[in-house]
Amino acid sequence: MALFLEILSWGLLIIGSVMLIIGGIGMVRLPDVFSRMHGAGIIDTMGACTILLGLTFQAGLGIVTMKLVLIVVFIVFTSPTATHALARAALHGGARPQLDEPVDDDPASQGEASSKT
Amino acid sequence: MVFMAVTGFAVARLRNLFGVVMLTGIFSLMSAVLYVVLDAVDVAFTEAAVGAGIATVLMLSTLALTSSEERVSEDGKPMWALGLVVVTGAVLIYGTLDMPPFGDAYAPIHHHVAPRYLERSGQEVGIPNVVTSILASYRGYDTLGEVYVIFTAACGVLLIIGQPKRGRRRTLRMLVGEMRHGMRQNVILRVVSKLLIPFILVFALYVQWHGDFGPGGGFQAGVIFASGFILYALIFDVDTSRMVVPSGVTRLLLALGVLLYAGVGVVGLLRGGNFLNYSVLAEEQTAGQHLGILLVEFGVGLTVAAAMITIFFTFARQEH
Amino acid sequence: MMFAVTAAAVLVTMALTLYRSIKGPTVYDRILAINAFGTLTVVLISVYGFLSGRPDFLDLALVYALINFISTIAVSKYVEFSHMGRPTGGDELGDM
Image (cartoon, each protein chain N blue to C red):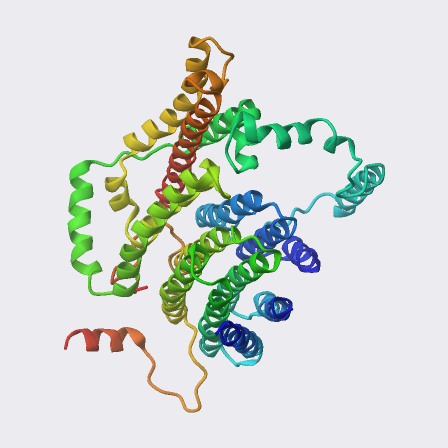
């Protein structure tokens, strides 16, 4: 049983590390702000959360696990919110996603139209 | 440390002040990691809370009031300044060559003062976290001075920038109008903040009282507590949050914290010991020390929280 | 040993995000990179705590996650409105 937990935690740590590097490469190589948010999201959720969950298996039951779970919950709540706030700020600041064909992209009119339903 | 060097260089070179603020945030993050590596957890704690959080927020508030490009000064050659810095740095490094190597067991500092604190702290003060016992009890005067400094900083901000007076009725009307349109948009931010803020405040209280046993204490707790209110003010209006925490209350808390700290000292005097000697506060010496440390840390937390809230709200209320 | 590998991965990713934060053509790239750097710091501190056997560091990691969040929101708000006191969300200025 203990060996199983060890292997599980090591597996999670390795997966998490690989995801971190993938997310980092994504942040460097993807073409524009909005796609880079995907990279940051991979770093935050797949990377950080799996690593922290892997650490909980190392720690056993107790206050340390409790704190790690709290950190994970906190990251899960706040990281998408912060990215959302940033994305809205970027959209209003004039950044547009890089698409293959141009579309009608006036967010103000789209926002009003949908809020009237 | 290579990261820190690169970032420091970038900070000096970037003209755009906004980029500078961001990079300063990263710099203080890296300092926090460095402190962690050096096994100084309390310092890392305070550095993370103050340097990366509050300092960034306050610098941004300042930027909002001034321009966002750095003005290049026309006169004078920057080479003089660079030369001076290099010479001073070289002299400092030369001075440290004389010091004993890092962590050397025979260094003088490890022979007189530090071992006495480390050995006697257990019996005399009786709490596990030696950093807190040194900060609050053995070196209580210094900490009192620090609290006065924070108090003075907040007073200075209040004196220089001042508080615009707004009538209560106008604030209420603005509040009602704001509720009507604010509700349907940015629901996500509001809901998440409302969920998080109680947790943040409770965590601040945990850090405050847990300072005896783990890293923490008054300074860090005050900053975390203030950041809960700053989050509220960022998402909602500053005027709304002023109604939650009226300026009279923050001014009262600001002074009350300092008064509490000095008051504990005076009570020590009245009971027959020296100023800020906690041993006389209760029947048994360690119980007195516990009580004294608890109260003074609470005083520190109150003043720090009130000072941060005051400074942020004062900056944020200025119309450009 | 495993912790050392994880710490190395975190450092590599930090270097990548740092590159993006210095290079990023728009300001939003930089904000995003700093947010990611903050989360990486949280992970690094937690792993380091395990590496050195002192789980007290987790309090620090939690504070750091909090500060990272507040800073990102503050900076996004600054960039959008250039004013820190207004509410986020009023329909004439656009929403956030």
